[in-house]
Image (cartoon, rainbow, N blue to C red):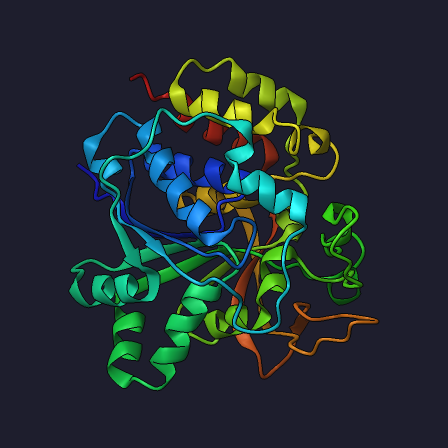
Length: 341
């Protein structure tokens, strides 16, 4: 049998994180080794840890139920950016969707301690899917900067990082290939930010993202340039609703929730699930190599923090610039539909 890809997932448990996590948990070629939760992102930390543990019950597999879930950052490494109140409340309440119950034996660890222990003991290099604000891995790599043994361990034991985040603006790559930031379309009434250039995951914790970029580990950044080509459509929701299993029913409830449904076909894209699919099959996107840094400076009147800036002194990053839309949809539905319990 082919070797299953060992994977660590870092998540802020947004609606599309559920799509990504369930895709990887159900994929026959993937072995999810642990899930770290960040409270610097959409969900509040305690709610996110509980929600991920309960999500595992959607799959009828005791080994999956025992997947370690680690509680990580309660705040970003820099600033205090946060999602709007309504978005966080919806994430905390798992978008009105129902879990089968409460996980009776949750395995809960501290995120950075769990990651250190895992990397020191694992025998096979692991792939990381980073679909949160980057605060957990940023803290680990910050510590690795002052700990040569931990730094060597990270570089030897992590084969690559697939990270959903960021965008290359039109002024850097041209109008046809560029992507504007996605802060403004999802703000609602509060909180108020002036940032028009960043993507949410990077905006939440630009310092955490910079530490990840500077880790020396190969990174594939699934940016808005690619995800904007794969919108979440009503047709996709209907195809998902036609699948008769617990994960599909849960995801359909999430997408039909009062918070998420209004954005279907408008401003919601296949953000995190595209990153999860790219982890398994890189041919779903076209990547280009850039040297990038993350803008750290905050200006409340004209904020550019979190902007990805091409810079010859930056980190070398493979950036997904386009995606094969129909193949992405087909692959996602295939994996979700194969589950029969």
